[in-house]
Image (tube, rainbow, N blue to C red; front, side, top):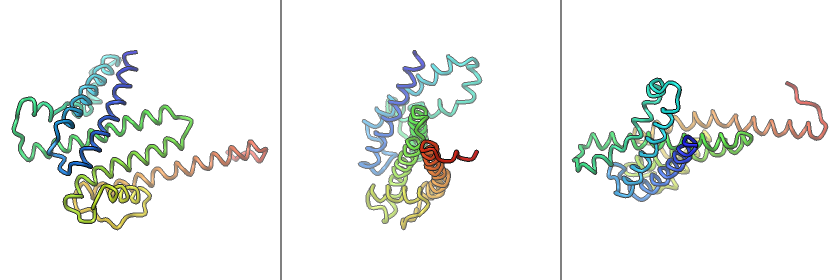
Length: 224
């Protein structure tokens, strides 16, 4: 029961983090200048992640092995910025950049947790898992692209441009917006790779539907 509760809390925290990150990026351009409400939301999410991590470790047959295998999750679950604010620490420019990177990685972890829950709960619905993966991955990529590209790339006028760029790259078609930052260029490489990996899933789904319809209608049994 405790595991189930902490898993649900981790899912809710992941959704909360994605929503908070969306509001922070869309309405505030500089991710390193965290607003107070985003810092508070991130701290709550991190505390839930830490709780979930230690509960899972306590229920594992080999706790130390679990800790060594998943130490990166614990590292990303520590609310560094909230601690710095609470201690009234003056952060250097380098520290702010590092914290921005932690936020990016934490958002990817939240995306993974959300997608894992959707896919596990829809194991008989391959299409739903496919759509959720493509839409959420494209959305998070658009958030990151907009955050880093909008201040320096005149082609990204609003968040709609970032969304269009992200999903056009996911479809491997490409867009007439060329990234100028390192993060943007990395995303420009990763999105088509994800798209090429995901679109065959849709083809398999449609083929299985067609084969199932043929069998239901008394047609030839699909070849194995």
